Length: 199
Length: 240
Ligand SMILES: [Fe+2]
Image 1 (cartoon, helix red, strand yellow):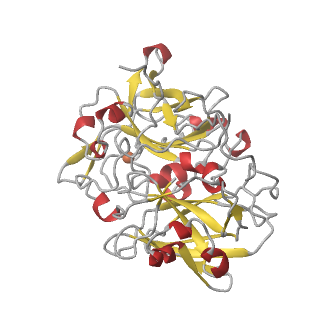
Image 2: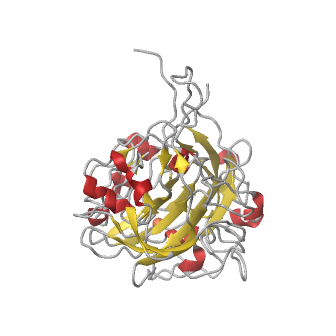
Image 3: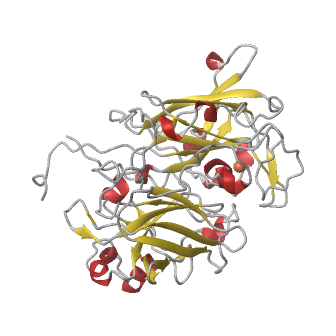
């Protein structure tokens, strides 16, 4: 026998369930309780950069829309600075909560396009949004990223996208670009399964 | 000897994605391997919250939605600490909870269970841990409720809990159960977790020391987030 290491174990995850909105977006569950619901505004009033709108649908393995998903967004500002890592615009939180429409499953949110951020090895990562998905039937929240379809050069050099061995799967992380709108579908399972990360 | 990096998540401790006895997971579970990444600022930073974001009453579910009186049910205090795997407290982190009322009914437009809505109970709360990682909520004990996984399943009484930590990769949602509940062992959602020690860690202990005599019974529930890795020797000079 060796000495015990005495680390604690991370609390195991459990599904957020169908009523996640009660806790994290009570207005969407159908009642008002908090004066200030968190996560409604990612960027605040003073954010610099290009304002964008992102729409999409999360689909299950049969192709059906997931109508009870909650997505959290975490992003840098337009200069590529995460809140807490340097000065960002007053009111810029970089974090928000998005839920899908209960009828259609479509989600929509507005933010600004983030700047590029360097990774731990000083390589430049293409602009991206970090996403975390929870829903009924998802046992551990899923981490993924949304890259931008109009950043082809930066995406081609992105060290994370380039880790994906099956090159066609890189496209699952790249949103289709319109003028100021982006469309990003997430597939939990199936031929088009989105790349999820163990981070 | 510092590093922002985290210990890897023990995927044998957490439930796998595909757990067919919990039927909803069948079509919502990724089947391809996750891509393992060395974390970057994208994962090692995360949102922070302050007292200005919340209200002190938000942590008191007995009062935070009361309209005409107190909610019905067993008055309880749920308290504990948020720690990391190194047993270090996680201060000033946001803890959010949601739950059914004493009858097992959620205040949600999609919940149609026949148990009554309690006009004085909303069912959600939030608080920040203090400088030592402590948090406390006052609420009523939630009821068990039925759901159709197999034809006749009942969820054990539980409180859903969401915690942030300091890094987006520490983000965690879980459920807290109550010591002594016979439904725990029969629940397909609980049993998505393969290791019984990990299940035991989700069961709050009756804590008589923390009860308020003739007022509220108490349960203690510590929440453990991923720990930060220490770097004793640098491989590369800073910035390379
Ligand atoms: Fe629940």
